[in-house]
Length: 558
Image 1 (cartoon, rainbow, N blue to C red):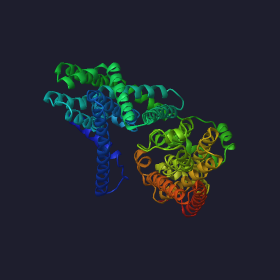
Image 2: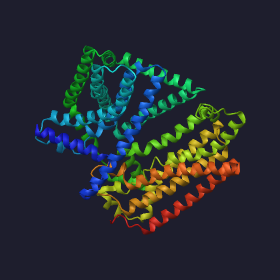
Image 3: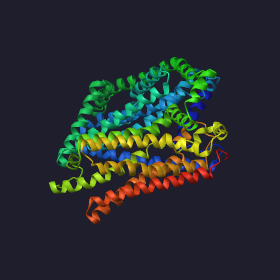
């Protein structure tokens, strides 16, 4: 039991530390401060999400749909746990970096799996509490407060995510077993996962827009109420245990809720038993797949070497690194998908429909105003792509990702400009191509003119190029080669923060300045000139930063 408690403690600390990874060897006070700040940010975000969910509950009460809240609460809480479990299953349950070390511990396999699975369940329960508690508070403030119903609602918070999270773990296991049979298992896993999250993003956007097309607030509330009712009805139809829980909470009857609790706990225990039986096969398969390497003969190596320059070979290495680390790919590839999704959405929806979809509530917009706003909003589209391009900063932390193999790059017989240029090109080239594709889609659909299409490419790439070279300089000045997992440099390293937060500030600040300039001068042409001028200036500044970086960087001596 002591060994199991120790494993649970290690898993919880690892999950907490992943929220604010610190460089190895840092002082205890520094780590404590970093975790405290991460805790403050997490509490603030949790409070914000809870307030938003509470407002949704109040909207349901205002429409007379109070009885829908319990089912809707179960939907929201379960979905949060499902997404988290699907993301964390690989790397927490299977695909471990130290699998051989874990299995050599004098602890049973069931205890190892239970400690890791318990961490996933605990995180899902915390997320469910954030989403479900405000809804139940709103529900009981507007219905007779029966002590039995309140007790059952409180118990439903930790029980609700157990079965859905177990199903999500099985889904992650199935996807992993499917993709690991491919030659490029990581790439297949990344493609399927990105497709899954793209569908979620597009579905949420379509739901929001369909509710926003109503002409007045009452119609919007009705649309939201119908969606919430459909979600509740769909959940109880497809997932009968949720109906048992809702019946127990609404009526205060213990019997249906006991059946729901037994089902949830039974599924969770079955998940534990099945996963511990499959633990060795899946991890053994992943370990053998990850350790496999192509065996090249001397003749084949000469053929490959003769067809590629050092610069091209290093670019290929960067691409392979990107698709070889799932967390790295998830953080840096979704921005490319987002750019194309935005272009397709704007082309399919139209700017006029956006303005008349109820975004500005209570304001009647005339046709003349629609034309005026549409011409100005088109000029702001490039700033949307500034935000999107900064969501794919693969080059920002590429030096630190060399890790303990950095000495190999430092001994390559090429100048630093070649090494750094390959890292930059592996990020800048896909960004430029994606911007061009998005611009072409918007121009062909007629939602943007040729000038605005040019602005998307020039401004989007210019700001991105400046920020990514600054981030690369920060990483080169103080690289972190002592990381234990790639997440330490991929998720919250300083270069990543420079790119992401710098891109957000540039997008919102630049868009606001562009709007104010057009409003002051009364001409959209002023915004066009600002976009093109800033894009060219940022690209030139980024090139100067890169040249300075190449002259001052000695790979990788720090």
